Length: 74
Length: 251
Ligand SMILES: Cc1ncc(C[n+]2csc(CCOP(=O)(O)OP(=O)(O)O)c2C)c(N)n1
Ligand code: SF4
Ligand code: SF4
Ligand code: SF4
Ligand SMILES: [Mg+2]
Image (cartoon, rainbow over all chains, first blue to last red; front, side, top):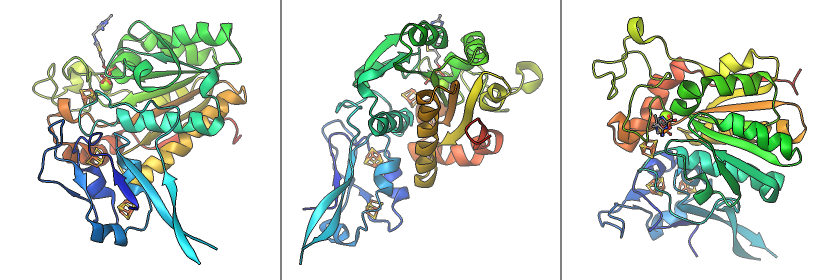
């Protein structure tokens, strides 16, 4: 399961999350979503690099991002 | 040992799971989220009554999963006075733009604050009348071009931008007054803390609490969302400093 879940339909393509990520992991898609915006996306490879800091989610004005963190269980 | 994924950031329960009408990059959405998050944290969702103003945030009832009263333009603090006095056990807040609160509603906000009404006011300062097409507001910055100041705000003629958080902090009835911004993750976290302090002020019955939030209006500033967000730090924060101007719990 991915750590960063971006709701493609909720995203309005403002790009604020791309500036918030300290590791520059989020970029804008070149494919329009159903509302006509270019949504934010993250590649599978960059999902692995994500540190689950949620900075992208906190700055998102549209609450389009949900964050999960890997935890060790016994 | 194996690993699992734990959710560390979720949509607040007090905020309805719906798409908003706000423009891309409009920070009304961020501010809605922070208010809803505080409602969740204090467990007051089922006893909260919101009072909506007139402006782009007029659809408060559509986005918060709470009861909302609509007030005439600028009169939200007067309506909230009635609500809080009739139902003192409810958590009562208004959510107002700068045109609403600092122009047509100047009288209502000053007197509600001065009477020390036990409400919380969220004041969204985006230096313009967003909903009606970007007219000059009392908070419009010097030289800022708007649809009614096409050559830029001329302070000799139009006066100076008004600093509401500082002004209200002078009033005896005000228990808490602060200004925050939501332009960086760090400022969003700080804004969340301040919103919660304002909630606490009301929950502890200490008096009137006020949070001014600097907010981008990309559409009426004629900027893309990233440029508009950058303007908050470059132009707004130097004139409207981020600070807590009064906190009676710290006294
Ligand atoms: C009595 C009255 N006068 C004027 C208006 C027109 N009007 C609607 S919203 C608004 C200003 C809204 O600006 P602001 O409060 O800053 O909210 P924003 O949209 O910027 O969030 C005005 C003047 C009105 N609805 N009612
Ligand atoms: S959670 Fe942090 S590291 Fe992961 S994408 Fe978002 S901002 Fe980047
Ligand atoms: S901040 Fe939110 S709305 Fe803006 S591009 Fe990122 S996910 Fe989309
Ligand atoms: S006009 Fe401005 S304040 Fe209104 S929704 Fe659009 S960006 Fe937000
Ligand atoms: Mg405004």
